[in-house]
Length: 275
Length: 275
Image: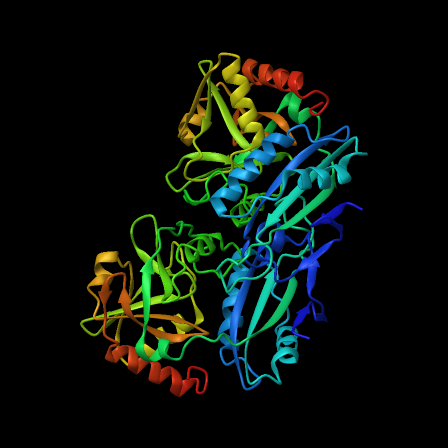
């Protein structure tokens, strides 16, 4: 059993579910280590904020906790994905009344990313698929992910680990599956996500760790040119932790001190995940 | 039996399908009359163009035809929805190899919109949810429809039939479920859809009918102010045909001659649907 739908072991869902029909819902992708999700509270907080913005009822937290626990308690290492859709019904785009969300928990194996990605860094490219500016959805981890799908399939080369996406105005926003940070003159920068992008749990965690460590932090617009002048660049998400970027298109970057220090702080607070 | 999934009678789909996971797919909503889909060829042509743009393999047309026929041949009046997703698999956003799309045909009852909508017109409002500008997806009837979901749920009043959506630049683009036309000084205008919006089958049909009838036609950007100066406004889709707008926010509009003439031309070429 690796899937629970509304608490029941199952692997399929009605084709009338609005998650399929319209992408009407949210998701969370969570690291599992030693039978638990170390970032559970942060994921649940983001889910709740997403539900408020999409006017989705939030399931009971004890229910979500029990269902997650049933799937992960015996797992040393895994990934737990939660999809929360608006369920079935409604007339066209109109919400059903009442809204009865579908809770879908799926346990996946831990991905086999090379360990050297964290140690030595990764090669990265720019994607030509842009992120549309949509403040109503910005920051949310929602089910409308065609932009990421198109962007990720712009390249096939196995040595390129991630592609960076820009908005229509030329601001670099994030990777297809990760958030982006850069360091310049000991200042940590990450793109502003008020018009597009996903506010990742690892991004929030790193921003908090950096502020607590008295690093200078700027959440702001970052152009392609600004990014290419960086001393350090790194990518983040809950499954990869921190991947330094050692090459962006033709340009090489060193794995820098601040990247290393943040990796260490993450490993101190969330041990045994990113090894 | 009112659903066929890959040719089999069924009503549920794997939760791993990329249609649910990412909204990675397309759909068509087709009018059914007297056992057939009168706009079938146009829908199939748009589906094929959408597949090319999303790099989705196009199913055999004979297969789609046979499956549609099995669901509609005994129906006097119905709606046939086809969802074509990228199927299961892939690593994250990356396409599976090979891509095996899921074909989902769902037959719905014909919607009970009031007949007077076509005769006397409808009340319409502006939505505050905007359409993001995304040329890579513009025109496509894809499964990422959260903007329409949010926009449609901005109002509850039963007397308001549709909401109009603008892009970030203040251009009026379309309704939540319909395309938009306006008439001014005997010229027929409809918004340019190169940055956002769905290129509806009824919109294309009307543009062709109008050009064949030697009407002056402009596909262009339309601001809110320009729209409010219109002599006639109407909404279109395959299920409603043409609905004149008789009120937009506080302003009233007459049901005009060109709206009537286009309704007549549609009824001449596609009889018995919009009655």
